[in-house]
Image 1 (tube, rainbow, N blue to C red):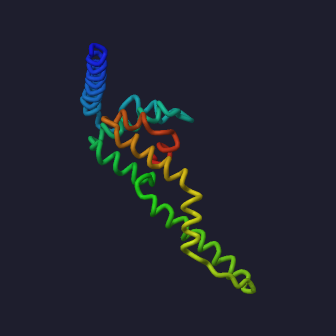
Image 2: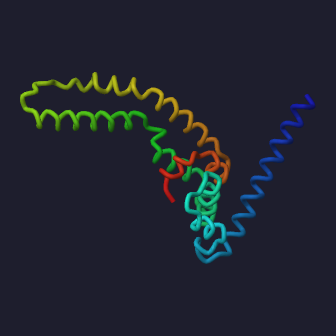
Image 3: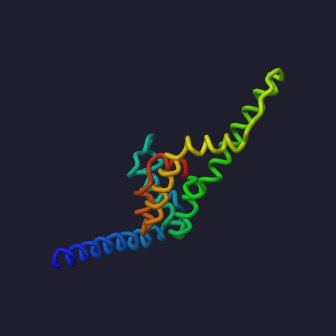
Length: 165
């Protein structure tokens, strides 16, 4: 029982540290006239090929400076990354595939082929099950972030690049 209490206290202490860091950052950034005046952002702009830690820090500062809401950040990012709506992802892949096949058909009118959209959709869905499982996993991880800083630290560099500055 004692180990359980120590673990709980460690979690509480960690959360307090993170929350204090975030509150201190918010107070510090509010003193600047523009985002570009913040020294860490100036440094970020000067980095030719930033790593994940540098990007996450800059994104965190930006969103704290603009006083953005954590839940809105998470929801917008997860939606933009396509982690929520797998059906829309599959539908877009089907549309792309059908367009390509239609172009092929129009370029070769001797070809008398039929497209079974349902079969195409089933095949594309099966081919993309790994992506669906990965998206679901990434979505859960990102949704569980408790601060802006934690959210961006949980992102991969590819996710941050896709979300854009």
